[in-house]
Image (cartoon, rainbow, N blue to C red; front, side, top):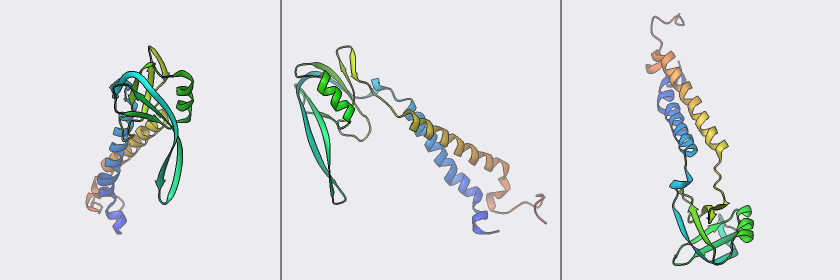
Length: 169
């Protein structure tokens, strides 16, 4: 029996099962995200600025159209680089409007998740349901495969079959 066969049980226990649990956790966590738990700011629009932002990645300079919203009595500039959001902001918002902005909670810096003007949602929050379901289902499948293997073949924990196994001749 080779090394690959001897470590089959340990790979299921130490590799597949943790990956399946992590995928399930993050998929479920993403599906249960609620926009009302995101950080939000409310205020009057001081200025809306459209500009091209340049950033460098591996010796290549990229340009991205960006819209920045500044609220009065607030030192933070809220940004979006999503083309449909930029068009909606240009058509629906102007200086002096009272808005509520929800920000993404992940690593994005002051990136707009949703904008509400009065009681009307101008830019709704959209989450990637397909990605979340994919992670959740993949995690469940991987976890069930790992647990099923560990239950069906407990004798593989030491990489050898027990004498009672019918496969040994």
